[in-house]
Length: 471
Image: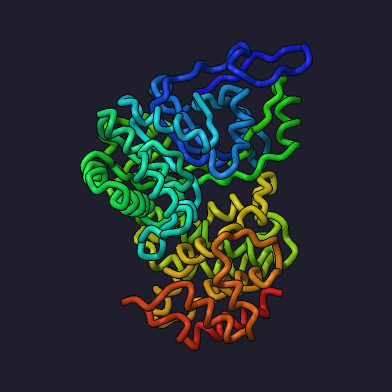
């Protein structure tokens, strides 16, 4: 377990491992892509609480912005975790980040992956970062095409997309003879390990078919379900740490007491004993993945869009709105019958979610949650729509999510923050029926579960009704 540095009586110093009582840096054996608050409250926390934590340090790389590395590098990767329960705060110094880098430091990534002792790469880059379409095919964006060309010319060339960064790193590992490794996705995607495997393999095949063959033999693409609500850090959080602990932390993390991690993988090169901190290793993550995506993430999307339209700023405010609460319960009623878990377990999870959402000391901002709806609505809501329509029911809760998202695309509620919204923005300005049918068409083509959503008159009618009901 992490320790806290000794308090000083002089002007508060900047947090670093030079302070007395701070945990020593462990040797790097994990690389993380997507350094942010969630990683530090989740994977880094679990690693710090593993029974063999002294053997497992993390080298973390930022996503698109270098801000986290700029804040944490002077602190030697240390940060304070504020666990914010309804009755007060608890503070803990998390020291499992041994090194932090900006994403642009591509040579450092290659250097780590050349090391045989580096056994795991974890990922939190959000759904958009995988650049996969609904069929798990790699989207040949301009950046992907440029990265493929760069790697064809030089396997160590700097690249910018997640699939290319992984391919470049794995090419370096193969050349160094460093052996097997696990890539462990921790993003909110169904079967996220399989998605990672698909896009990485396709990009590797385009660069060097022999590398793709090596990846198939030596890389374990593991899947996981992760859960811990982690809001954006505020100046008040920073001031609180200084007042309570006597040092300056440029980037503390506030989080809720609840945490969950369920994973499935072979881990041929080893892994920390994350189960010591409560993680579970199972044969199939899918039931837990679906429970999280459809119940927590699905309701988060509903509350983010509908709640912000109704004037709320955070999850606790939105769930206290009787209309929002009713829509959330309807959404959960629709999803629950299709979860392959015992009914009593689903009921307990729903009850726990309501308690977590009502925690007014976790100010999870709706403006943070609205991002990337063009990807999130597809994986969080469409599977439940299809399952309910196949059962002959019209899902009002799901229809509310779609209606609220359309209103959001039209400019209502929290500001739009969605790099994939352009096709939807081109159609939502039409009359309601035309707009609803066009949006449903973009959400997914016909499959064996349900007819084309845009041709489903009952579903279209339900969404149109909810466009007005949201307020």
